Image (cartoon, rainbow, N blue to C red; front, side, top):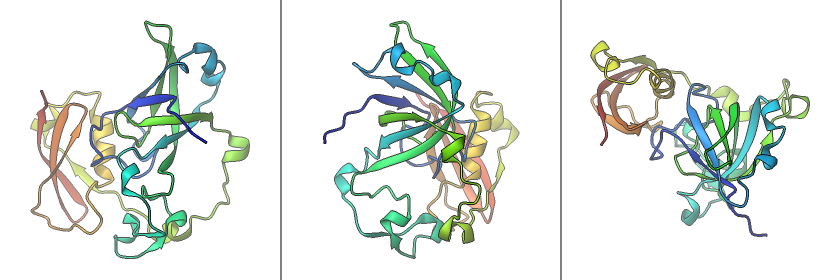
Length: 226
């Protein structure tokens, strides 16, 4: 079976570094889904706006050529313990497919009469191809008694984010809530612990640099790109 993208997502992440490790961890993150032909029809999304959340099936497009392995090192376990690939959400999968649950903010029509989906909380890089979109159903998709396996015993502790006032004044107000949520997830690899090392990533046409000491993450610089 051959599958083709039905849409692409536009997000504030031009590169992988900084993207939340799961959808919903940064609920203020705004993204837009733009359909490609012949799927860009308002008829194809009729009734979708009645749902609050969606499932996105998409491609780890940056990892397709890297193949897969039976076991991987989940970041949540510090990158030094192996688990079976099907017991994780690793990007190195046989078919390089991702699954994300996002909040649907609204459906609108663009100037060409094609649908645009505005979503919140996506964990996708800008330009990621999307292969399918399905409504999230509380009657079947929500399992309050579900068990989280090894994830339950390795809960991720959020970082305390400090952004100096001088930097806050530089960054557009509409980006600040999502940026703070992204930084609170501590984008560094789990095995990094150098408090003097400065990390940087692009976010919404800004380059943001930070360092981490313990659970305290401090933004040291933010500069507009372009």
